[in-house]
Image (cartoon, rainbow, N blue to C red; front, side, top):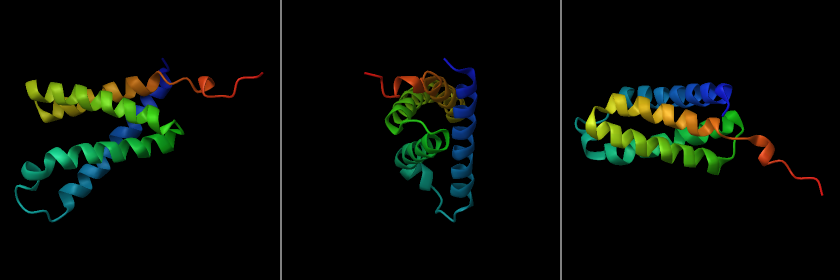
Length: 112
C-alpha cells in the first residue's frame, strides 16, 4: 500500500467532489431536487469524479471504478447509520485506500 498514492487519490477525489458539490449548489435547481434525484445525482457525480481522478493520477479506469464502488458502498452503509457527511468522509477514505493498493509495475509488460 502506497501512503503517497492514498493521499493523492484522497485529495484529487475530494477536490473533484467538492467542485461538483459547489456547482450543484450554485445551480438554480428547484426546491426538493436532491430529495427527488439525489439517488441518481450522487452516484453519477461520484463516478464522474472517479474518472477524473483516474485521469489525473494516470491509473487504470477499471481499477479506479472498482475503488469508487468500494468507497460508495462503504459510504452508503455508514450514511444509513449516521449521516450523509460521515458517509462521504468514509467513502473518500475507502476510495483512497483502495487506490493506494495499485501497483503500476503489475501493469508493465513482462519480459519474455
